[in-house]
Image (cartoon, rainbow, N blue to C red; front, side, top):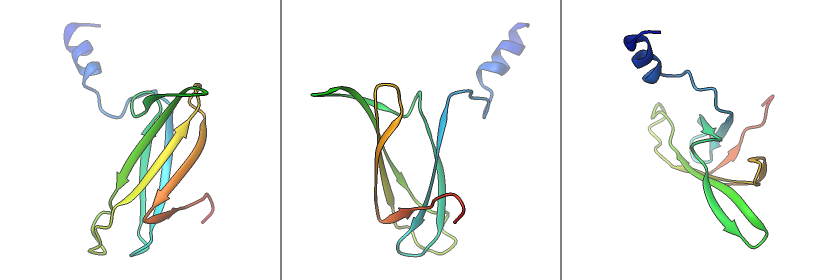
Length: 100
């Protein structure tokens, strides 16, 4: 692979192979469904806890504005040392489960 090929690969968009967690929420105010993702390699912050190391992620989600509602829905996820989800919380909305 030549120089230009390596440069193209470096700046390629949407080619990440990192594990992703899909987040789907519904706004309490307008009912709009908002989708996002958490990259389990880059979006997590490390926090030392009494029981060991844990990771967490806090994300503010705002809809596309089609309903003219710009209410922020805040999600917080907690992960164990192996990046498996152990807790999740939400403010301003509710989680949409598969099949809804």
